[in-house]
Image (tube, rainbow, N blue to C red; front, side, top):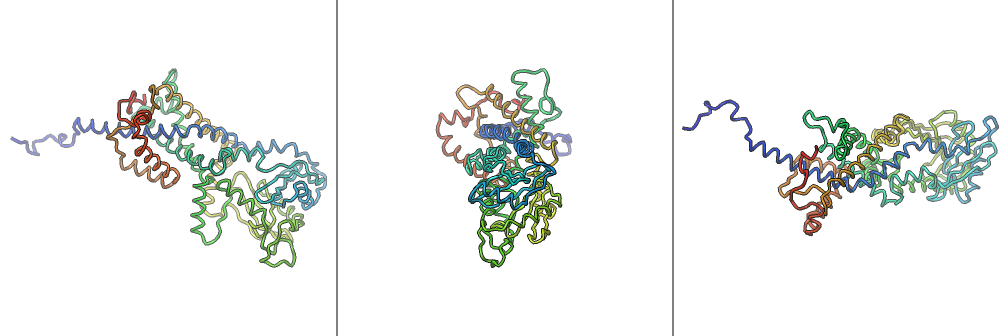
Length: 487
């Protein structure tokens, strides 16, 4: 006789069967294995770049202090001595580097500081240190040869130009994958905090390295993700796409105070060193549409503009720039490392008055968001604490990389790479596919590389038996498999 619904116990119809529990555990184990593979291969590709970028980035955080130390030998000017006209200082700098034109004059930051004059031609830019008391040239150096600029290009493009910038951007994108998958793998489950939130003291061997990897990753991953995302506006591909998208949506040329790769930086230089098309060039009688050779510019307005701008006490460094292909008027700008403090001025060369002022708060919302992010990325948003936070994150990334390599080396089976083997029945849950799709859309270089990797794995690598076994593409047992490998 079949039992009726009324005779069943209330919990019988809702209690999951043992097979349901087993099925759920199996699905979680398969998902864990899939994400573990992503984490493994992302780390394998990223770790050399993470080590290089962390080391160079930790030094670049202290760029203002480094630049001040390198400039110190030229900052012994008589504090109370009368100054030569600024136009005379500029002419001395131009004579020191023949064939160049004025790019910008940097106001001395203190009473004993030398004036710094940026002069250039085409893509070339030179920094000339001039004694404002005697108009004597103290030193000159190509801008690209300065330590901070070399460090900037080493950090951003590995000194490889556009190719290096693309590699760094690709590594940054895959580091995001590595961090997100690592958070999933190591996130505390249940009440288990030991070995993830804090280390289990007194352990040695593999447990020591495992806890070091997990605990450091738990505490630095969020900061590291923010560090990477705030660096993307500089990237050639991501930053260039953002610039093009903004330009497409705008009804006038988009101006932004950060460059997107080496080509963008050189274009800025060419414009600042190029001919102008404006009557405010200091050449009376010239028509508005007649190009004025930069070499024929009258630099005497600087003698009026420099004191007027100095009196405004803008955040240092402050640069005065003549009319050029970049800007039709005399301009002044604060290039403060803390970007929310920056100010842009358009000046009247006749009397030094300010025709237009644009403070950071007046810039478009997107520019302000990126400005805050870039300042935080460079360690300049909230002073020394920001720099120390940056060192904490970069040091954490180094520890993550080294501990990950040690764990891999200690547990790798002989004769294979050591990647978690694939499972034939593995299927991506819809949520995981959605997250991957969103990441690929937000970081197109990541999306393209994921598709290429999928095609390469399915179409070539899995069809070559030695490579299939070496890369873990064969479904087979694996020591420490599943969530239990978390220890």
